[in-house]
Length: 259
Ligand code: SAM
View 1 (cartoon, helix red, strand yellow):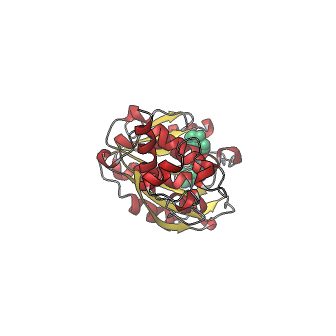
View 2 (spheres, rainbow, N blue to C red):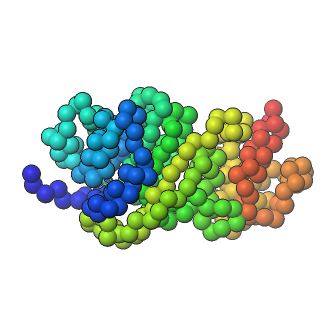
View 3 (cartoon, protein in one colour):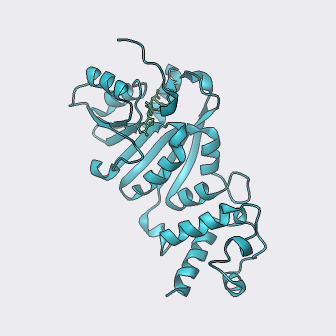
């Protein structure tokens, strides 16, 4: 088969280091019979060992050339190929409990994480390789530079852990940046305490929209001085100082007020 030329627009950097591939598969710990979907199988670096251990795997891939290669290598019994954009893919159709894995295309990683967050209710866990800088933002603690909208909205729904880093040399072609493996486990639904998640999302977006401004300014459409006092929050703070629990308290206070 002719060699596949990596397409930049699809964020194609293919894993080629067998030790790293083994380490990632060990971290995923696939068990025969589980329902799993791999986003962006590419040339199959992770697909091969996953199919071997699971017996069957779903994949979502956008590149038709890569799909043609996968179709030649696998029978339908072992691999179900969904051709298309993972950003628009309905993961709900794969059933529950669903495990999601992937060496994600870095150019769409943030919107893809928000898209996947909507399926948290049917997912048992997700393990991804992402640009390290994005993983640092996902797992960041309040008060740090990395802490932002992505941290709050993902930590609201998932327990997250950065497992290990992967150097550029593990890929062909090598990317410019270091990657990290992150595991995301959805929190039980009873722990998702926001009465109105859309409102929580709007408040968090406003609080981090202008990072240098204080909450008094960024949240003026939601809270007045009396609300800050009732919540026990200093309006002179910036958004990066508040914990996920404090954002939930703000959203629930605003939801109560408008009732
Ligand atoms: N999993 C392979 C590996 O580890 O070598 C390939 C990883 S490569 C970083 C990203 C893969 O995602 C490519 O196969 C690319 O074609 C695919 N991809 C890019 N954008 C996509 C999208 N929007 N939906 C689905 N797959 C996409």
